[in-house]
Length: 185
Image (cartoon, rainbow, N blue to C red):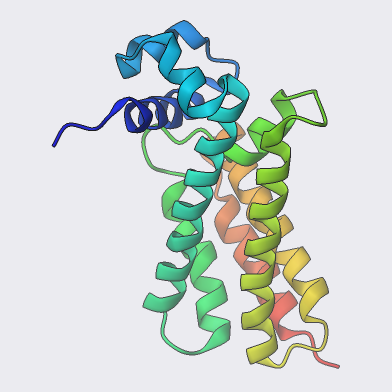
């Protein structure tokens, strides 16, 4: 069955906003999705709503990716957390890698009330909780603080991977993550 206008808009916007940023034009989005302008407003209330929904959809996919990566690493919390950095090392070398879509959206959208900011904050909070849960299982003395530190490393890998080709930020971040995980009370 052929996807409807809503799904085509989401797919086109997810691809185009990653490649070109959230400033991509509405006409470009509509043309790529092969939908009428009315569909954008019917389904999302406008471009702002579409951007927020694209980020929500991407966040769900990315969170599932973190969970798959950790699950493939087994049951040891340390191995599960370090596997994230190993996976990021692969992600940042993939063709078309453009960095972190959440950071890019936050930086590009100057209006602090843009609905996308709530989505990116919520995404980061959920990833932080996911990391913190593993740190608790590890018996880390400061799981919340360490989760914040690991998220900062993840953000750094994504930014450096996009802006410093030929470097290996994931390996550097993994070394720092090992130090965070080794912290004792």
